[in-house]
Image 1 (tube, rainbow, N blue to C red):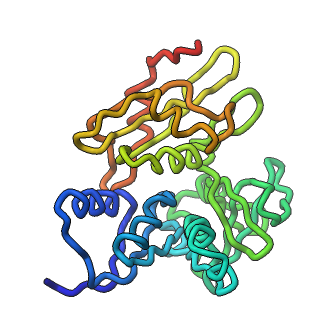
Image 2 (cartoon, rainbow, N blue to C red):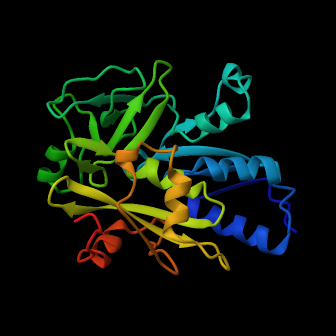
Length: 279
């Protein structure tokens, strides 16, 4: 009725809209572009908007401390020419920094890492409108900035040779398993590709041998009868075998915060006594 052409929101909002459109058969023909941020966007969502509804989804990233947008993922013409799947993969990244913003990734010792799309490290940012201190909190300010004034985002990321950044995980969410790191975001995005999964979240649970192992928490689409074995079968070949979740649990709905983000703190509390079958 209103003829909206551009809309903005977090992934949870758009997942709900896609479910509504699927259930009702309604259309959003006036909408041409959606900008989405606040959490990683699964490729399946980007593909569905493009192929079923003719909507271009632009993935953005930022923080309140950045006022707030830091990057947008907009493919270059050369990348668009590589075909739709290559385009969707680019759009699923967090993108290149906006004018005035700089990115770098560093190792635990603060040494700058190469921007080759492979090396991953803590993401630091700086720019004229990036926070320089927290109000009346000297301790937090000192912890948030490195010696050169770069702001520590708390994200683990890669940056490729063209300056395109991709969040691997939040430093508090990445799963340490047997000395290797498992990205909860990669597992979640892979699971979200299943047609019967509405939402997915991955958290780490302690393991006596491997230190931590992933637990996949799933909300199935209404009316679907989804079994754990079916999810595992779907993930095979999409993620490395050692990264596969040790267990899958189903919830009627995912806990969300006020902005629509999944509350992993709540999930950790809910499943703190959950025993993995591999223990």
